[in-house]
Image 1: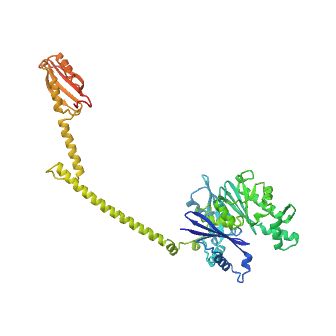
Image 2: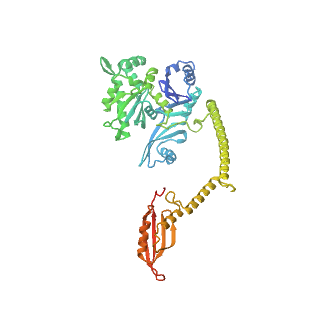
Image 3: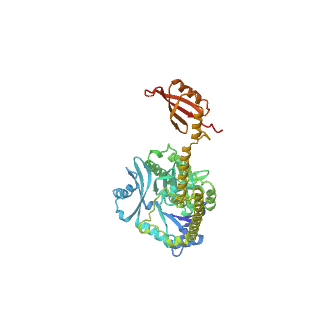
Length: 522
């Protein structure tokens, strides 16, 4: 079943919305919308909730899953290291560690954390704190607009979700140059490492131009977008605005320095610019020169999403909104949700019943049909088994007349077969059609009448005939061996155990006759 995701990037200059439709076939971008603060202030009531409600209804922006964020400069972040990696140990340890680092009472703040890195030596944990009052105000505003959020993140780390839509392999510094501030997020292969807000944005550049040229802020804004601030190509340079960007570059280097040497200027690190001010003429070139880190504007996503984004709006302007929407489309690289305790999202069972009622009914019908099929199969197999048993009893009675049928016909027939094999062994079936009686007859017929030998014992096995006897002379014993060897089935004849008989005189002897395999069928 399709699910609609609505993300709201609530900025100081405008509110940006992205609507995604998630279905079994994938995720599709439906629309991107902007509601400026000027439009809200132009309303008679100046009510943000009412303005959002009207805006949502006008553009059909309702979403089953609403996700938004708090401004990064209104929250506090901490990077903690623990000498263990077990989440069950980290969870209770985070509040104690944070409490020792902040000068305020944690009871008035909402705290959440996420695992940034895990190694044998321990774990790096990113902690986000926001005033509980601010969280409740933000939630109440959206709830009043009919948009109760299910996820409330903090600006900064949430930018890492862009890795779902854009190529962000290796170390990347996402730089959202907004209206009042710049938000940066340092990522490694799409995973957030650290985030920070710098109080330098497009508004500072506009004010610098207005002050230098003595024009209104509206005129300065138009000049900024038309000519930029860095001069060249017949454009006028704005020293005050350049100073603001230089400050931004210095703060970027400070943030990278605190993040570790792995993200230094000599690595594969790239700065990716987004936000409305990312369109500023030559800003990517200027930051590359100042920081000595390659800087470029965020490239378009690949595939069908690229066409959808460009046709719906400016991908740089809507970068944070796209990042928030991506959070709800699958496993999250940032697990922070500042909606906790009584504000935590709860399952609406009535809504689930409305959405999945038909599916559940069909599933129940399929289950009932399956159960009926099993019962019918059981009855059919039972009838078959009963018919087979009746036929088996008849066969047993025919094969063994007068004998009562055993409880287990298979076992009874197997036992009868074994008895028959034992009887066959007694009569003997050796080498095809030679029975034990046949072998005895052949032995008797091949003994010359003139030989003075007496057979005292004769043992016939499957492949062996053993004869024990008495003869007055050893020569007669040897003649016996030669005579018996003329019979082809007697493959090997051995005379042994020749002893003198003191009582009768003469010799006692034994003859072992091996029966050849496979012959004697004629």
